[in-house]
Amino acid sequence: QVQLVESGGGLVQVGGSLRLSCVASGRTFSTYAMGWFRQAPGEERDFVAAIRWSSSNTYYSDSVKGRFTISRDNAKNTVYLQMNSLRPEDTAVYYCAVMRFGRATSILESAYDYWGQGTQVTVSS
Image (tube, rainbow, N blue to C red):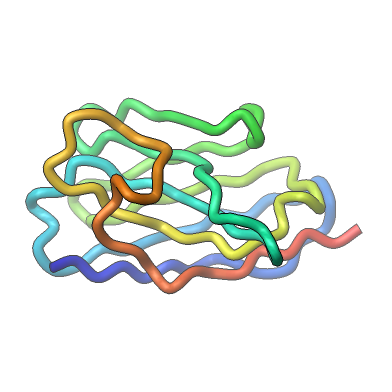
């Protein structure tokens, strides 16, 4: 069992930056990858980024277009999402997720086993 707690969301102006954090606790030894998803009002939850826990290989959705950077600190069981050049369309609830015993990084929600409660990111014009 893994528990995830996101933090770092808030209100930011267009072009600004935020850094989200997600701390995992519990049975984290089997973590294969961690990812970030987001869900805007009335929209489906979409993949944002993921990172392989052991290799630190990273994967990004086309929508973030190199503006976001995912990283992790294995010792702290924490994953980060550095978000730069924020746009209004980035406004969403951001969720972190854990994939256990994976063999490949996935953009699908179903591939992830544990989810945090989400943190709100609002980009104002």
